[in-house]
Amino acid sequence: MVEEFSAITRNGTWTLVPRVSGTNVVNCKWVYKLKRDQSGAIKRYKARLVAKGFNQQPGIDYTETFSPVVKSATIRVVLSLAVTRHWPLRQLDAPRAWFQRLSQALLQLGFTGSKTDPSLFIYSANGTLLYMLVYVDDIILTGNNTTAIDRVVQCLSQSFAVQDMGPLSYFLGIEVAHKGENIVLSQRKYIHDLLSRNKLSNSKPVPSLCTSTAKLALGDSALFEDPVKYRQ
Image 1: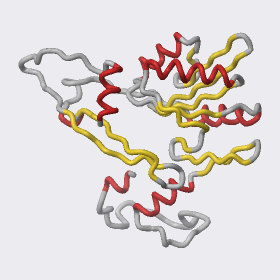
Image 2 (image 1 turned 90 degrees about the vertical axis):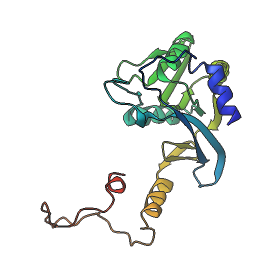
Image 3 (image 1 turned 45 degrees about the vertical axis):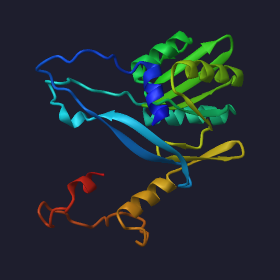
């Protein structure tokens, strides 16, 4: 909690101003979470101070909200390039580095934003080529110059609470296993967690989730008891 609050203060997340009468003041609360690795072991304890956004009304307290995330196709392309050209894959965690501020910092470091994917940043100068993928606060950095990668990480650490996770191993629920000069992408842990959460761990495997001859009709079965669970 102390680290979280210190990072928020250091990054200037908010500005303290007098309360305006007649306005809705959104309270905050602490959220605690266990950060696990691809094997399920506890990697670190996380505490975040978040706003109670559910107390706001759209169109009154806020308008449009959007957090750019990198496209899955872009991730696959960059990973393929890194493997083919034997580049290192570095993983970073930058909490509270909202997109606009992070973008400005990267532009100052010489990166340019991709025209096809706003969450892909490219640095190309003097023979050095770096690619950075941004998914909210998870970052993948790769390129042909290890020294330049270290320099970028160091520069970002001066402005953001960046945690260097080392070589890429677990990203967006995907395990990244290094096999020689290749990598293997797997969602084994994600699938096991999904089965366990829905109490289906002992179910027998089938080649298809639904038979090709099944005939479905509206209202042919009862509604699911928990709609939130169904949507997940």
